[in-house]
Image (cartoon, rainbow over all chains, first blue to last red; front, side, top):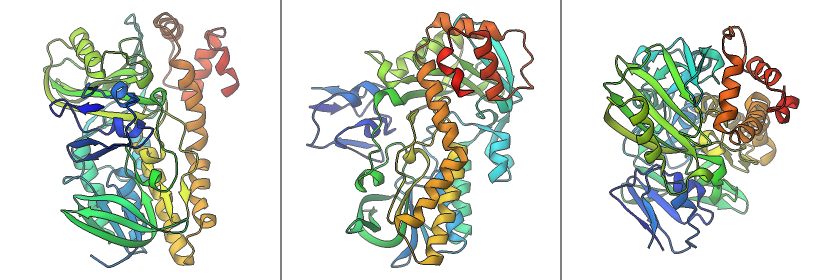
Length: 55
Length: 390
């Protein structure tokens, strides 16, 4: 599972743009990961601030 | 607000606002923005070509934080070359105040007659078979379904609208720059130059220092998504700042993703057009996107007007938008993607060699193509793969 560290997230949407299953939703400053996520970790790799991690 | 619109534009960045302003001259247009504030937070280094901007808009003093005469490009070993503004990929000339610029473009759309909604997030499309017929919107907790004849998707790098319509807009990590930037003060910047730093300080991307006022400016970098392994863009940025601007204080942090990919292969569907970052219309070399956003927005707005005049929203009519942007900046995007694919493979040593080969040249008189031809002629073996492009 991918976890969002809200204290790091800059709500920029870079993760949303690379998600192959379109599982990430960004509403203002709130980022959420849906159940279609396959934990491919592409979002983890491109996040500029390291706000996403596998848990 | 009306019950239905000729045109709904999703996203009030430069592409969306310009599309809405263009369409609103003749059509009922609605511009929706998911954020509660247009233009904030900024996800941009704010450099723009003077010529490019002036083609579309009369530049307003309040949009412009600073005017620069040119750019300096630093090799990894610190060697630099200086180029005049209009050569550096068109991304220097003015350093904008995007918060004010974006807001003014939205105002222009409203003054042209468009309705505006902020805190209005598109959650889906209304479709009839394969035709897009409107947008589902969450606005301040209320679910709305707003019918429209044409939808223009200007919803940025994280675009959803295209995906809902079955267009693949997913970026590969090798085709996105993961960017971090501080607005810093107490920094010694050359006030009339936008500076670019090449090499492994920002693998597969570059660092930048764009002055906005005396001793203050945007200092940031982009790292290619596929080159990030463990260290984040912000880690690279902190190291970059420590090395080049150790006295700087951080006033603001901006982060974002810039597409450095090919353009989206299909930017139209019946009832739908994609513009700006949502269509991956950013320049693959510089990551700059405002000028193409304005151009694409204008072209989409014009085609929307035409479709409304004809009352024909089929692929055949909307295809005119796709043909128009391809004829306008499509070839440059294609060429620059191939150059980017080549340049991201160069080592620090290669980059040093390239910059050394241009030292002492007067390059104010040259175009980007001219600059590239000169680089290639001085480094034939290294750049053999690019010869055919010039």
